[in-house]
Length: 247
View (cartoon, rainbow, N blue to C red):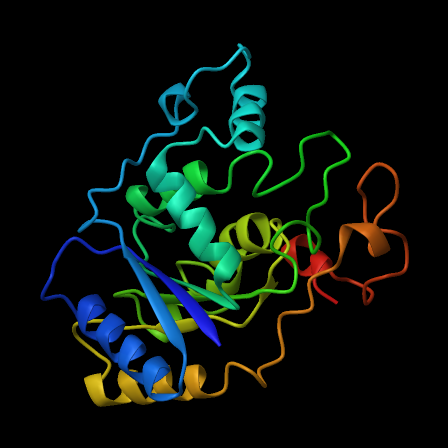
């Protein structure tokens, strides 16, 4: 298998850096071909703007992005990441949870790489939510957080971790067509969880990538009406919120 790991942490001697190295070592030991995008080391440009597109005849940003994709005029760094994603069987995003989301540099990676034409279609009928150019690939999040398990539970003060990750897993990765594996969540990072336990969890999840069942998110083409509302009766009675969109 081919795995592309997108990594975001500024400290070269951090817990995240150690876990990244463990992940690469484990995957390569399993025979994977591994590529790594270390966004801070790459000095990744985090702002999506018209400079990404080259000469364009379009004034609207979304149209200019589609034009650049079709003409092959996207900047070299964006094209390189798109090529890595196309070559990969599995995509892993690894990051610390900052202010309930990804670090800005990783958000910028999403904004610039999943451009119109690549991350989604070039018309209002575009393929998404289970379909699209990246369909057939698998994606998984590896996230660290200083919060304890209880803080990230259904009644925890931070909210359920599955709700916090929903915009990334469903709204970015599944949106672009990929199947989403349950995340690897390292809680109590830096103060509570034993490092050996973290490594054991990470290795187990990497060793079982192929047989892990993806989250059963509902596909746009099967479960929603023409207004993109979930069809009646698809969910267990009483289901609300993000849980509506997983079978």
